[in-house]
Image 1 (spheres, rainbow, N blue to C red):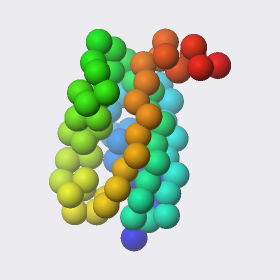
Image 2 (image 1 turned 30 degrees about the vertical axis):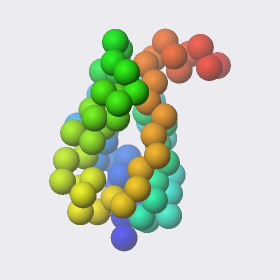
Image 3 (image 1 turned 180 degrees about the vertical axis):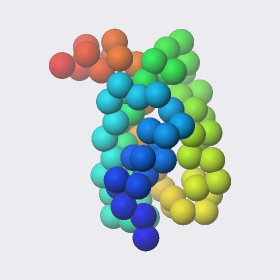
Image 4 (image 1 turned 135 degrees about the vertical axis):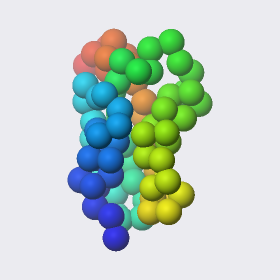
Length: 79
């Protein structure tokens, strides 16, 4: 069973993040991901970036991932 820290590391290894939080129970995870990679992209495109970073793990190990994908400016505006 995967830990939230492992999922966090998978994302961090393949997507440059300014802020990254992952929580979950081993099968279902929630993530807050802040990356400059999301600038100019819509929500679907942002999620595709995360899926690309996770690669095959998304199909094989992670059963559900709920994401908030934000640019650094969007993250700061939430402050």
